[in-house]
Length: 169
Image (tube, rainbow, N blue to C red):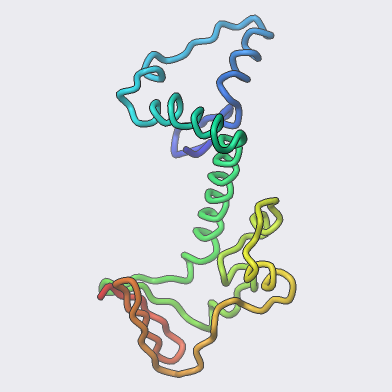
């Protein structure tokens, strides 16, 4: 869930229900909890009331904060990709196409999809990410062939000169 989505703004999304109840009490404001939030018929409520407390108690006490940080990082990455990578991609006949030259002109961190805020997070980075952050060498192998096709996971990556196309197989 995003703090802002179209016409809906959720300015207190960062706070827990307990924190909001205490703040309302301290300010002398009534607190209202929607009855639907207690109905276990809804999956979100079974997760909130059953699964998360079990995970916090038996496995990871900080699971809620960890999931919140992960969601925030993923949202930042999505925003980053939307601003940086998607403008380079065009859609044509069931394929996505982009220019290798335009891709190469991006900053090194943008090429592999790490935004600067995500690199600075306290979450552990993979060895490849650490090497890349340290010396700027991409963990991905470069392909030097002018024309090449590679199939993987039901997709076909096709390179012809400067243009790269991604198609469903």
